[in-house]
View 1 (cartoon, rainbow, N blue to C red):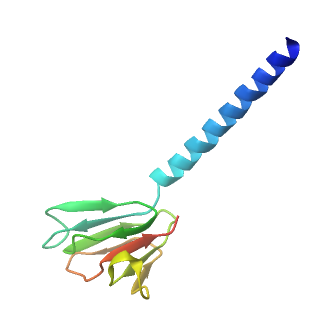
View 2 (view 1 turned 135 degrees about the vertical axis):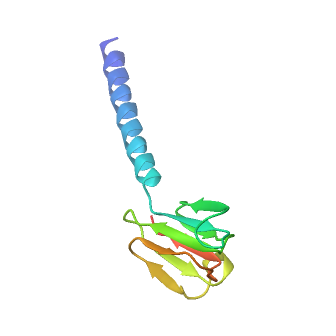
Length: 108
């Protein structure tokens, strides 16, 4: 029975460590860089926040605000992040007029 308790304690420690690692990863993704896009005109009206790592479609193009939290972004003139990146963001950026980008890739 002592061996069972020892294994049980080891399992609990392993589960606790895994939970802490997952919480840390979730916290990092929650604080990832994000881009708010606006229908416009300007940086107002209907908005959408893009914070997903990887490729995302940009559906609104009236203005944008990129908040840099350590993850760079590449902006593409084509859907699906195809072709050559038109613009790369590695710091906070904002433009309150129309733009043509159709997709964004946030590197996490």
